[in-house]
Length: 145
Image 1 (cartoon, rainbow, N blue to C red):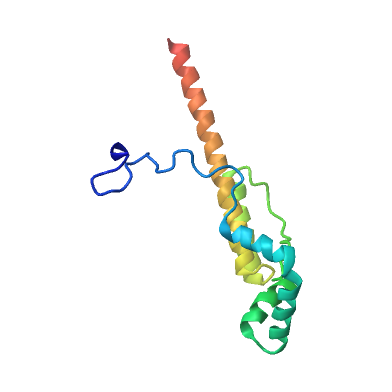
Image 2: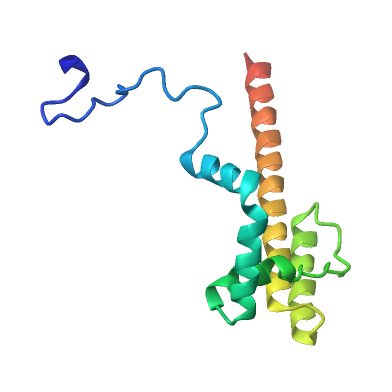
């Protein structure tokens, strides 16, 4: 046992005090408690929380309201974008997004979301172009051997 620990009593890196780990299927204590509540007293607990919410208990209201009225989803963004398979197309897409914000047809949040997609598309295109260039260089090197 001494070989598994450092002089300060802590375990050495890569060595565990329980090498077998937690057995498969073992549940967390909070999960077991929640299951016990659901099995027996869930309805009674909900009635108490609802009664407290009706009486003005803000904590109870915070538990109930998000389940009754979930936050609305962001509406779909409708904007015509050019072909984004080229650098010129990506630049035009960003210009249209900026114009959409300027004219009020896109919110700044929608523009940010679209811009992140454009950025991801640009990164993918760069990767594809670099891979093609590397392949061409490797073929050229093989041809000269």
